[in-house]
Each structure stands twice: as structure tokens, then as C-alpha cells.
Amino acid sequence: MKKGIRYETSRKTSYSFQQPQHGPWQTRMRKISNHGSLRVAKVAYPLGLCVGVFIYVAYIKWHRATATQAFFSITRAAPGARWGQQAHSPLGTAADGHEVFYGIMFDAGSTGTRVHVFQFTRPPRETPTLTHETFKALKPGLSAYADDVEKVKEVFKASPFLVGDDCVSIMNGTDEGVSAWITINFLTGSLKTPGGSSVGMLDLGGGSTQIAFLPRVEGTLQASPPGYLTALRMFNRTYKLYSYSYLGLGLMSARLAILGGVEGQPAKDGKELVSPCLSPSFKGEWEHAEVTYRVSGQKAVASLHELCAARVSEVLQNRVHRTEEVKHVDFYAFSYYYDLAAGVGLIDAEKGGSLVVGDFEIAAKYVCRTLETQPQSSPFACMDLTYVSLLLQEFGFPRSKVLKLTRKIDNVETSWALGAIFHYIDSLNRQKSPAS
Image (cartoon, rainbow, N blue to C red; front, side, top):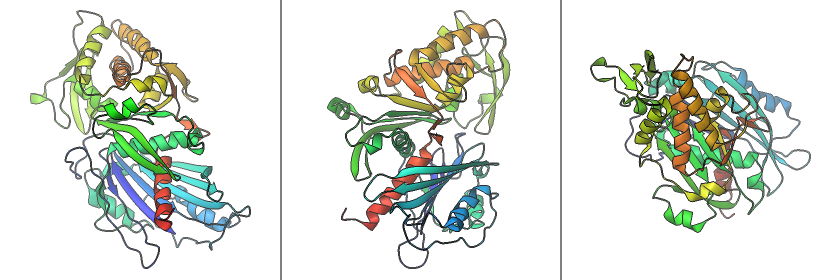
């Protein structure tokens, strides 16, 4: 059995280790580069810590219920608890000759730790099929230890997983975007059809935002700036993705920039941050990355939306690369895109749905106009909707472009977790069979 651990923050601090095929348990350190230098000890963005645990088990018999139960019991255990010796099933295959294996992911965000247990089957030399997902959310999240990496190590050492002393690495946001692209295209069936059309991915987090799609136009590849193209090998195929993560353009970080604040720093002399995107009568406090800011609206000399759009445009100016090809690629969007659209009734809050990019602008104008005359339970709604509307247009999406917003496809979460597991498992298979 092979095991791996990944522990990440919004800047993607990660632990990773793996058991070799032969010999005793050993750990290995893997460092993934990021844009600029990052400090592990302090997390500046609210996405918190993400912990990924990949467990790859090949050739497990279907009828070995005890082994299956041993894996699934992880989702019912409290964080930090010790489990007994895990059951190991003998090597074999399912009755129909299909390979059966599992992937387990601990995604520890700012609000809690989410555990995904994926069960896969795969016919010989074919793409795997996801047959089951068990999902469990636990609180508090490991991000509660964002300032104490050693404390996180202690949490893992109290678990049945073996964690080395020297296992901290940095994972950049582009890898998160690539993994989310794998998830979406696997769940929509695009990865099963060589040469078929794929879909793009848009993710809006708190500290960063990601875009990823498979270019079909040579001009897109030639015009892409350095660092925007990523080579990906999956299921014996190689993809050259357009994928980029914009650190600082996540929704919460964008709020701070629109307010005129500086990431990780209190307002100078404790002054209020004044924004044209807030109701003129609004005064309150807002906490971001463990810093509390006093914020207020300003007297409007024009429509609130016009003033807010002008301010947002200043924040986005020259920060986003625009591509023409996004006009012709089907895109799925999730995270804050979904939450904002559901919050103003553009999509069903439970089922999701489709909308056009211009719907965000229409909703922004309505909410901003309403804020001018009456207080709202969501004082940042005008700012957030205006920001998303202009961000999508900066990416190159026309107002008429249709986006699909969803949290789940076939009852599976549309997060980076599944894609990261697939990528990890595929890399293990290539290590086992380098000739292939």
C-alpha cells in the first residue's frame, strides 16, 4: 500500500511523503516553487490550511468488506484520534477483473476539515471510474494552527499516518487550478474521450482566483505569458493547459484592495477605510486575515455602481491576462462565483444552474441601487458583485457568455481534491511502469 500526505495553505504550504515499494517506511521532501518568496510560519490569506492525504490501494477485492470499512472509518473519527492497526486485504482483483482502489483527501480549510474518501474501479488499460464518494466535514479546521506548523505536525503524528520531521513544501495556486480542471473534465466525461472537447474551470477563493482550460488555438499558446502554460500527463495522454492563479485577487483580498487596505497590515493610525462600494450610511468593522478594519461608505456624488465600478477597475488594471479563446470554451465556475450568484437568486442555491456573465452586472446594479436607499444584511454585496462582473470581463468573457455554476456533478464535489488524487495516482502508475 502506498501513502502520501499533502498539507497546504492558501499559499499552499504542504507536507508530502510516500512509502517506497520495498523496504521500511521512509519520508521524502518535495518542494514546489511559487511566485515570489513565501513564509511558511504566517498565513496571510483566509483560505486557511488544506491537508491532502492520498492513499493508493491497488488490487483490493470487492468482497473484502473489512478492508473497505477500515478505510471508510477514517471519516467518522475525530481529528487527532488514534486508530488501531488498519486491515490490509490480500492482493487481488474484483470479480469482474477490474482493479479497485481508493483515494482519501483531507481538505482542511478555514471553516473546517473536509474528508473525501473516493472509491475507483478501472478495467485493464482504461480510464478509472469513480464508483463512490464518502464525504465528512469536521470542525475545527487545521487552519486553526496556521501560525504553528509544529502544532500541525503534532496533530498528524497523533494519527495513524507516518509524518517525517522534514516534510514541509510550498504548493502554488496553479497546481490547485490544474487539479480542479482534472476534476471537472473527469466528472463531465471529457477525459474519457481522446480528442473530444474539454471544459474550462473558474475558481474564486478568498485569497486567489484560478482559471484553467485546454487551448485549441495555436495563437493562444503563442500569446500566453511565461508561467501561464502547464504540461500535464494523465491517463497516457499529455495536455498543455492554460492555467494561472492570481494571488491577491480572491474575493476577500480584493475587498481589502478595493477598500484601500494593505494585506496583513492594520489601517494606518487605525483610520477608517472608506469605499464608494459601500452604502453611504454604512459604518462597521470587518476582519480579514486576523486583522480588524473599521470601514465605512462615502457620500455618493454619482450612482453607487458607477463609483464602485470605477474603483474596482483601478484595482484590476493590468493585473489580469485576457485571452480571446475563452469566448469559445465551455466553462464551469464554483466557490464564491456560486455563492454570490445563489445569494442574489441568479441560480438555485442547492442545484446551481447556468447564467450569462452579464447577469452579475445586472445584479450588481440592482443591489448597489438598493443600498443607496436602505440598509442591507450583506453590506459587501454591491462590491462583491461588481468585482466578479468586471473580473470575468477582464478575463475576456463577453457579457453574453454562458457559465455553468455547480457545487457537484453526479453528486461529487467539484473541488481540486479529486483531480489531485487522480494526478497523484497516475504518477504512481508511471513510476511502477516507466516503459509505458
